[in-house]
Length: 202
Image (cartoon, rainbow, N blue to C red; front, side, top):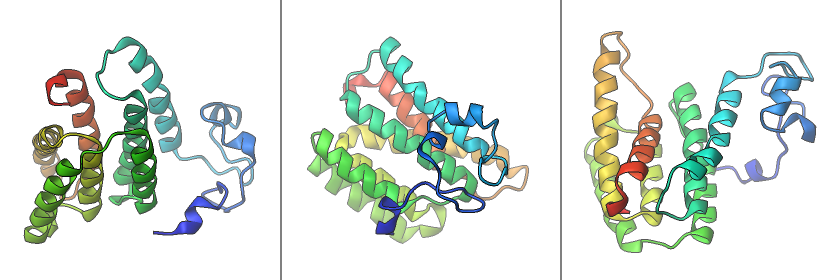
C-alpha cells in the first residue's frame, strides 16, 4: 500500500508526464484527444473509456431502477467495482489503495454491519488459509470490506452467485486452455443482480 498514490497527479501511462486537468475530464478528454495521449501520442487504454461509460450509466440506472439502499453507498460500490474489475481483467490483481479508499469513504457515508464483517471476515480467511490457490487475497479483502456495509445474508448470496457465474465461465474458458480468470467482474455482475432482485436480503 503506497500512500504516495494519494498525493501524486495523474500521469501518462507511457512517458509518465503529469496530465493537465482538462486531459482528465471523463469521456470528453478521450473524444477530443481522439483516443491518444496529448504528450506522446500513444493510444490510450480502451479500459479508460469503458470504465468512464459504465460509470456514467450509474446515473440513469438510479433514475429508472428503484433500489432500496443508500444511493451514495451504491454509487461508491459501483465505481469501486468498475475500476477494480477493469484492473483485474488486465492484470489479475487488485489495487490495495482502492480498497483503502473504499473503506474510508464507505464508513463515512454508510451505516456499518460489524457482526456481518466479523462473520464474513473469519469465514473468508479460513477458506483462504485452507485453499489459497483457488482465490486471490485481493478478492478476500474486497468481499470483507463489502461485508462492513452490507448484511451477511447479502454477502453470502453475493459469494454464492459469484461462484456460480464464475464457475460457468471457467468451464467455458477451460476449453481454450485459460486456467486463471479474474473474479472481481463476476462479483460486480452478481452485485448488480442482487441489488435488482433481492431487496429482502438488503
